[in-house]
Length: 421
Image 1: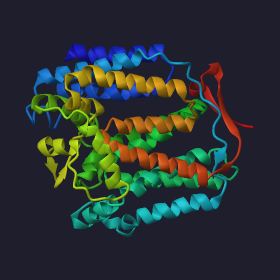
Image 2: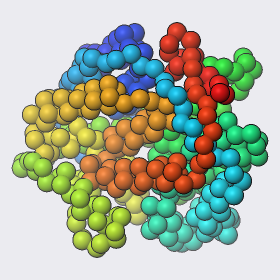
Image 3: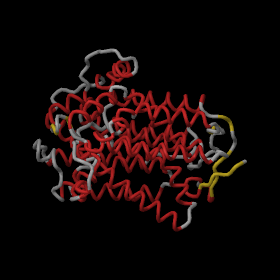
Image 4: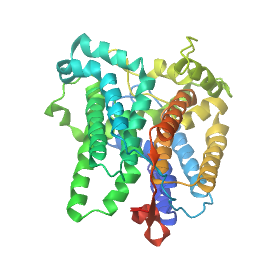
């Protein structure tokens, strides 16, 4: 295992040295974190479930590591054109009514928790559960709301009215607070991933004091993300959450359990599904978007019932990655050939045929991270809602104003700055 782990780290370092494409680097980093975080948890004996809980063999873990290395090798071999940021869209928010309407949608969505703040803070009893499932039942609204809030920050960046920018930032801050209280780590992280390109440019153009403050803020948010699963499982919000922080970081992160799903399936899958796992994405659209009750058991959910631990009546932590799904569909040919080629072609097509603004970079990074957190059927409706929400926002809620993004060394990402025309 040590040799495979070192190979992953070397490949990642080579990618940093030879490529100046933030999108490709982020994709490689996402893929690498699954085996790297699992290995750190394994060596420090901090993995709470999985290899110990379900007797997953070390031989299959090594075979899984090889699969991730092959995916990275194909990614680092993709020929890419020089990465440059293009002119930002002329669409911005310059109307108070729009941003206030988004605020009203925010208040409406979170009203059960706003009205029951005591239940939110205590996280005890039936009250929290009932409101949690009430909000989950209209989860598609959350995708629109998350998209609208982050897009508001992007699209008020060059607004003449400071109120619009501050209001958008306030909504984003409140959203993070409520998501933390509900134990929604993935939603919190995805919002930050979407906003990351803008934050990187601001960091590069900030004074040393502001950079120091941003670094401290990033560390604080990272710590919150690591303890958020404990909040979801019902632990009261207090300083006790931050005890044994190293154990939470190494053992309760987003990558350990999903990585083990591949090894688990290698030990337990006797019949491959071919394309049926992917075609269920159509059924998921019908259920989530059009609200048909089809009573379909999706591929990833079948795994969860076999292996995931129950904590406070909830299945915790276990989800597929596209690599695992390629194995249950096509066996070793899927993880050692079909998926590595597909993933490399995906990056080749997108990065060589698309132009990227800061916001588009963040949008793609968010979607790719989400894509690697589940099976295809679960990703399809999320992709649909995000694309529709973004298109609606830009088409109907923004007005025209011209500005662009430029940078030194022809690398707008590294030294980007927003310039008014």
